[in-house]
Length: 344
Image (cartoon, rainbow, N blue to C red):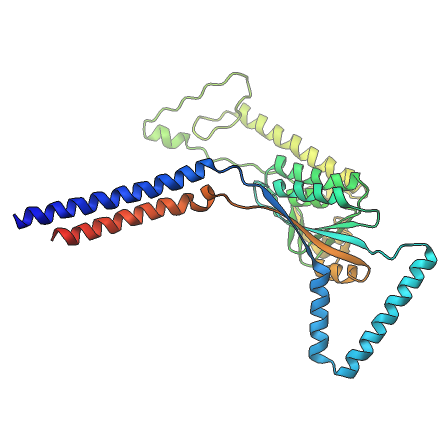
């Protein structure tokens, strides 16, 4: 009887725990299903304030009180002279703004979704003296994605907003497609620039399938609906068509770069090669050897600098989708462990 009592108690506890877990999971799933698509937030932060704070902190660390007093006096004198000169020229006292966008592109260029929002925001508020700096880092990726990203930067040009692109590390292939749109392209001395070329590759498992007596069928309507396939047997005709398509894309790429940088010897640089900053300057791919940091320090003398960032907060589905699954598995493991102990 004692055994039956303990066994019944074990079953009751196990069922209770499982039901509790199912109720929690059901509640979370219900809450997630009711959530709307998350909306993004536009964040604008002052880079000028950060740079000024760095300067002030350094001065307080290394300067005496007398030196600080002298520096403050000289700064006030310089500010007064600048205002007087601006008034003499008929300019207002307001500095123009420099808006900074960071674009760190991946292979699928999904970051263009945020870029379009950032560009739209700047266009809505930009004044005649304002400029834009894009700190760009990308090794390239899909043609349609980076083509759209370049078009977003073109929107700034179409509104007569001066555009500078700074490449501290790499802007190759699709990355350079974006960079060449700018009025001014900066590059660090050892930044990777160029690679005006197109690449496509695909594995083929047809021989492996045949070796294992596995048949693969693919049906299409249209002679070149599918040129190359991963599992079927590729033909020379299909390969030739695929190469023709790649060449068409390459010609489009070359024409795009030539349009924005007409002085380039395009056939010399559109070989798919890349170059470091110094050589890229000699070839005319960039305009200045300079880091984005130095550009910002110089601009801070006569511009108010702001970073512009659009970000989308993850909803509950994205935050808890994976964690809920892990939690359920872990809970079931704990239940199993406890029930084993109880059953002994």
